[in-house]
Image (tube, rainbow, N blue to C red; front, side, top):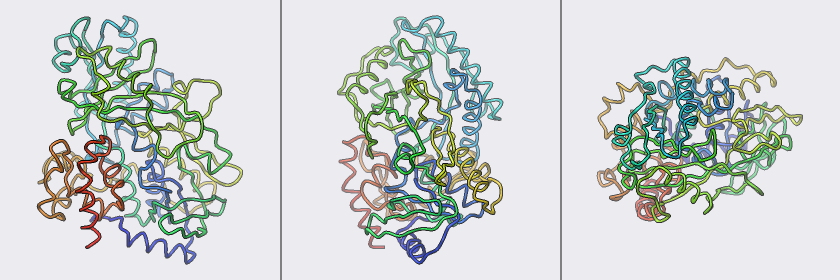
Length: 508
């Protein structure tokens, strides 16, 4: 049974809140952490309101690498606990929470003329440690195969775009990949709604208090006070704007979007060491739609935190330089189809470079009575949410059961064997799981086809988003429910269909 996020449900929830309906937990922020908190709290039987000033997944959560990491980078920094936590959460996403949104991704780490012998040995040791983490997390080799060494010929066959001269072979490992980070957030929000959480994007928290918050419906300008027994600030890099007790040092991570054909039809990810760095890499990550996302940078953000961060020319030039260090045919700026940047909510730890700051999350119960959950990574959102709700239950004496999210699948989730039997196109199954059949059934036949020759997204997906995922605008449809907007030319081609679908949904 599907749970829909609709305009009518949103209006009903707002009416009940305006009448003074209190809640156990108020969550501010509907990125992956906030949506995860809403699901965790609601699934324990608590009444929940989750708000966001913008749309679902409007902030950092949609700007990730779309990887669910096993924690290798954390091992390099000696953060064994964080690394294990990441591997364990990856296992849950791949096998239980969202098998339909995830897939195993082969990752190739080439040894080139720019790779020193000690770098190659250190990388090999790290990958073997990653295999041990995978085993400890309970992930079988059927799900993520083990690491193996390849000769130069085999490495070149897997990634034909690699420069043959100086190629000394490669290591092939496996990691997890999301089809779309924003779709994970939408799935979490719908799952929370299925447990009676009120999910209200476009409701801005004006001020937070120990006993609730003043919120504003940005569609109408109406303000109201919401009474809550616990308030959880899950706004990421914007957390310090709601409480003075959080200190962050945000950093900007930029990706560029390329054509997979321009990289020889790349189907395995490339891991390329950044020259002169020990634990920094650039990844070229193939998607299932013929694109490759390559990133990422790690630059400190100076000044105010923008709603939508922008990549810089220097970021793009850096990524091209690192990619070109291993490619036979160098990439040029004209090969960049699009670019995007996200901000990491890193805990301030003094004078360290942002690239060296810990990715460990923290839950802060501040003197004003606001619980903030900050730091962390996309992969570990569930554990972050669990820790935040555990703190709220303990400190605010809420009557709630233990965390249930280790065993809760998202809408559309099923075993990989079951997903293979769903009578729908594979591309839709990878985004909607068992609901792929419903996505097609609800749409007229003319919306079943791809929007354009370079845009595999169908009008049926846009209609589903408008009817069941609270997509209210063209931006919601093209930039978050689907990721067409990552390539400006594709976005322009899809605009007429998006406008047609919004009109169709409104006429229902």
